Length: 214
Image (cartoon, rainbow, N blue to C red; front, side, top):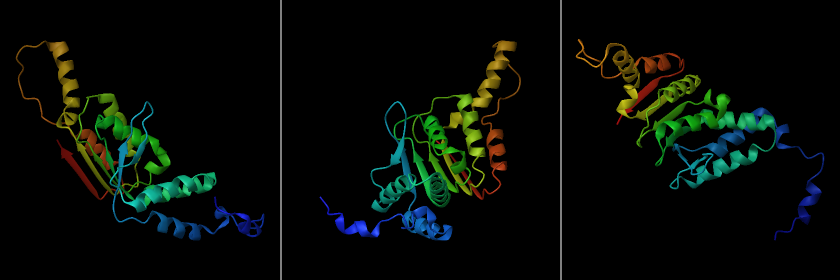
């Protein structure tokens, strides 16, 4: 047990608090805490309410950065807002589904960081190397979340090829319901990329977009 008596004379009501420091001083502290040249690999965890954590092989400095982020968030609403904004707005993130269906993981991560932090994301790669359960409504929600990332400069996404055929599948099902299953003239297109094109257009800061199909 550490002795704390020696510290008491230095702690008083007149001692400056962290949130009383000038903003530029706090930003300098945040920059030192969150400085990491490597991307933050984020993975989903088990449980009814899925949470996210760093993957096991992450650097110690990144674990320290996340611990500092969680501690700083407890100071005040102002500190919580600025520290989260700086963290998500200056780091590179790679989101890993790690055994889970990837679209729900992407949605839950984007939802968990809230609109304010989505708006400042700059560099993200969503690695969809796991299985995919088709859901056109969830895909639409996914695009809506991505379009709220208005500060995004570099975006990479890995998805299943069927993901680009969902809209075509809906059109085909509607066509068969009306006209039956007899021979049809013309060819159905392979991929539908209009939603992705619209998402790219709605990201004004985007400089690089990469779409990997599996």
